[in-house]
Length: 264
Image 1 (cartoon, rainbow, N blue to C red):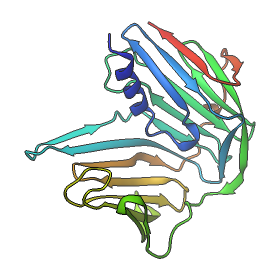
Image 2 (image 1 turned 180 degrees about the horizontal axis):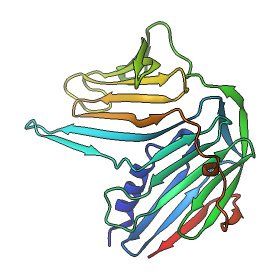
Image 3 (image 1 turned 45 degrees about the vertical axis):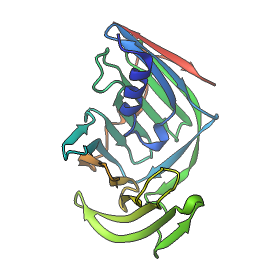
């Protein structure tokens, strides 16, 4: 049996690629005979972003390459079994395995954010239960990337740390228009990291102007490069059944933390 802390880390890695709307506090433990998942939905009602008129589906893929002192590269890629769907009404379905790379019973959680009906659902397929949480929409709006900077900006923070941002301008990725921004953080000698030489970390983030979502990001530190991208991107309208609770499921209204138990 793996320890709870190991499985908790694996579970958190498993939800790393979820959309911001689907994230919630979580801890988990388990083995090959089952799992216990504790969830905390946060303040009620949940606020859901409602992007209309821009349907899509895609598979988020995360990869990390760590460089050791001797030059060895360690490459880790999270399983690409996760998938995200959004329909023209702004409803979002996210499917994500809970324990990637962990020797435990496979568990897939399914989130349905429905700003039209005013609910977020968490589907427990093993027990056929739909955990329903009250939700409020931010209001229907067309797709748009986050506010983009137009000029380079630099800010100084305590300990001499410098944070800068610069626009990368428009480009094309995955066959669609995108806009990008680069953020750079510089830690001077003797900063809170205890470094004897300056340390620089940077990241690039590219957003789709068509979908209003991030399609690619790259984070670079002195020892690792982490990338996130989308695979199998489609602009077809998803099946409406993906955004409804399946027949036969018991609907349970949640107003606070709750637990899902899966046995094999």
